[in-house]
Structure formats: structure tokens, C-alpha cells
Image (cartoon, rainbow, N blue to C red; front, side, top):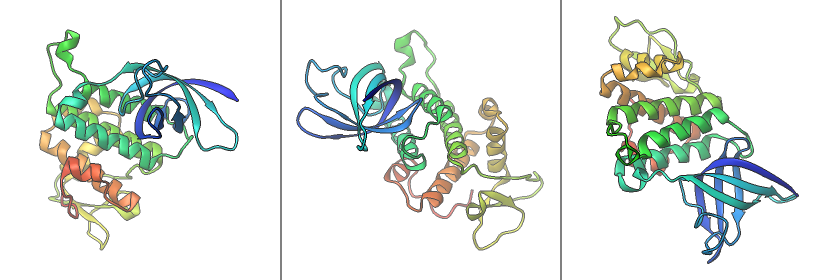
Length: 256
């Protein structure tokens, strides 16, 4: 058996026994890995007290021939993002992001760009900055922009990046077609969603790597863009995840 070292975020876990866990890890070099952490819940185990959901750690694991489960041998905690556990909105965003990673990416398919974006999002929404000597806490607007950037990068890396297209600012509404790769059209069809040009313009900024300019937009515009991508994800996977509804509420057929 070969030992692999990496860093990862725990995106899912289950109790395997009184002392062990099975975990879904999103690692930087190997992508999503399913593993068993034997004895992880024992006091003296080499797992920093257990593998907690939405924590970032260095790990060691062995891949077992003929098994779908790796064996986790080390989990050295780096970050636990405490605000995710104390702030309701941060918790909703984090669980939604982890859920999307598990649904849109394949096992053992590395996506270091998504890994970096997920970490950036978790640090933005999950760090108590005042406790780190930074008196400036991220605003809800910053959190919304971080979520929009993450959703876009994940969709791009998973092969579902919306095509978009040119949207004249003079028109009152455009139409987004989730069944045609997220193409924007001037005229409605049976499969399109009515969308405001400002919503598409926000997505265009992300597509053109201008995420830093999102804070210049009204928060409602960024919120509409987040809801549009979430609705698009729902269409892509063919169901509405609980984490999506918990974060955004009921998303009817978009009119954004």
C-alpha cells in the first residue's frame, strides 16, 4: 500500500462505529476521497480529536487495492472556521458549498482551483477576524461576492460554466437557457428563464476574472446572480438539495 500526504477539507462524515468514522474529503491533489478513519474518535488518536465537518487539515492516507475506501492515518488540523459554527448565515453558505462540491465533482478527480476557491470562501465566512487582530469583519456583501465567485469556479471546473453572451444594457430583460448551457438569448423559448441584464452583467464580471469589482454592484444584483447560479445547479443535477433551499429559500422558476 502506498501512503499519500495532502491537505483537505472534510465535506461529509458518518459515524462508522463508537470509535471510527467514514469521511468524504476534498483534497487538493486527489480531489474527493472517501476514507475510513479507524479509531479517530479515541482520545489519543492521531486525528486532532476526530475529523470534523468543514475543517481544513493535513492528512496522510493509504489507498487499498480493491477497495473504494482509503484508510486515513493522520489528520492534523489547520483551520476549523469557528464562525461557521456560531453564525447561521455562514453555516448555511458553508454547507451549501460543501454539498455542491460533492454533487458536481467526481471521486478521485483533482480540481486544485476549486479547492483553493472553497478554502477562500470558508476563510471569508468562517473566520472571526476580530480574534485574529483584524477589527474589520467581512460584510454580508463580501460574503455574497465570495459565494458567487465560488459557484462560478465550481461550475467552470465541473464543465457546466454558463455560456452567457453579450447582453445589451438597453433592453429590459434577457433570457437564460439552462438547457442550452446557460446561453443568454434576446427572445424567450419554452426552456428559458427571464433574467435582468444587470444579473448577467454581474456573472460576466466573474467570467472575465473581475470578481474584485463585484463590491461595486448593488448587493441585490449579486444576490440575484447567486440565486440564478443556484437554480442552474438545481437544473444541472436534476433535484433541489436541502442545503440550497436552506440558504436561498424556495427558488421558483427564475425571474431574475
